[in-house]
Length: 513
Image (cartoon, rainbow, N blue to C red; front, side, top):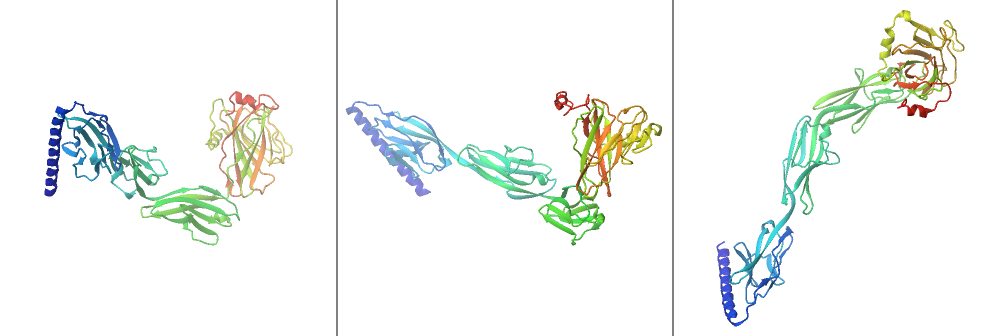
């Protein structure tokens, strides 16, 4: 340090000596030569350089003889004439009096003065700004962060650079928990963490200089098992194969056990347990009647235990209506449906009612049973095809209609997959049904002939309907294992006149949606 101070003092003394000689020369020349004013061709400017670049500051002058051109930074002399005064090895003069500084660093920012040493010194000032690419210098949680479900997470990301970088948070291959793609903040806060909020979170700093800087943290959430069943009810049949599937998530990885009712199942020739990732499957080969019933998958890890139930059923699936929504006739409608069942369907139960104007379709169809049962026995009649009330032809006891009010009953005909037809007689004068508000009509239809196909079906002609009205229907199917659930409600309409119906008329008047 002492040697460096002595060297600087010596160099400054040399500079003062040179300057004094120059002033003497200037005084002598001024008495012998015409006076030519020195001038700057360059003008004062502001320059921006990226750290690591080479800085070149222009100082083009004219008529400087016999004056000294010097570079200064603050009180420090960098050059005097062609002599380099500063000890910084990165500094030199190029192309005359232009100042060059190699390998720019942030400390090089500031004002640089090029001066002509006249009696009243003339000078220009260049301002240098050093642009620094962003750098992330602090992450409160880096690498892996492991937390329990329900915890709160706060991660801070600090960055530096010039200009000051913008810091954003993003999530790899996903959106952030708040639903946004990016968060413009150096702090990431996540409340009530669950497995859906785990993943790779990326902090990015960008200021437009060089490449953005980024750092990531992997958020690992520990949580008890969570189970979703692929299908709550699995339909199968004797001799077939059934697959019951539970999707199990948990950290750490849960152990999964299968039960039938309360009995734990072991792997056998007919019971096979597989798992691929989070998908756990119980395969039952060559289903026996005793295999039908309730099953459950139980998952457990260090943080907890969870159970979900499934049902293996031999009952029919839910039936689906496939008839057109508008009848060609004003007083009857041929309704048809299909149902999937491994065992033959033995009978169907069709329920229908007229919809009042503005009435909503009721998919909780179980409610029609209670409304029917509330009617007094004196106002109800049960009618069987093939005899008794009014007579019929061709059906025998193929169907029965009940919950009809006295005063008029409509007849109907049915066919299984369209192969058999028949009809009911009528009760009273004419085929007119006197509909009460929200009254359901139930028709129980034997499935004749019995079908052994997986997809089965039936059609039925509902008679005695009112013209230009909307009706709602639902159907159940029964095989040897029991009744299916009710189908979704199906809405159909009668025409105002018999004959082919122009569907566009209904569409234009908003009857169909």
